[in-house]
Image (cartoon, rainbow, N blue to C red; front, side, top):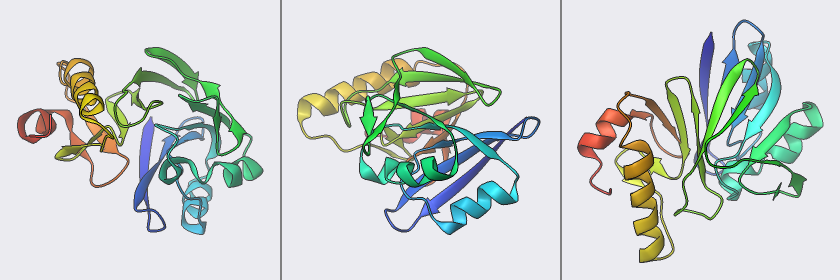
Length: 186
């Protein structure tokens, strides 16, 4: 059974997600932008062992805590980049499926916000980083990249028939249906 704990970091105003398997007591972290005592307590109080870390993109607010986590847990790190925060990563590619902690994690490339942006699907949940947030999309550095991001969101997310819960890098959680209906940024 899957259990998701959102953790908000005041240090960089971003979300980290602890995704735990209640049967195996293994877990993964998504976007550990800051590793603080509250996040450590969240992991330990729920008796989880961190098997993997998934980075939606290599901006510091989504990966700065990796070096500290690696000192505590022997976790595999997955990213669209080979190196994040001076730590080697296992590179993900579009439509990869990674089996870890009793989950199947599907990576989907989502270029536009950054060159190494990915979203991750686990069951009926999508972890979108800065690509798609409640009511908006991630910032881009050009009109071309904005168009690319909008195209990726339309073709790779909004084309899905199933309703997913969305866990963004910043702001509140939402659903794919709500974003299809009310996200006027796309």
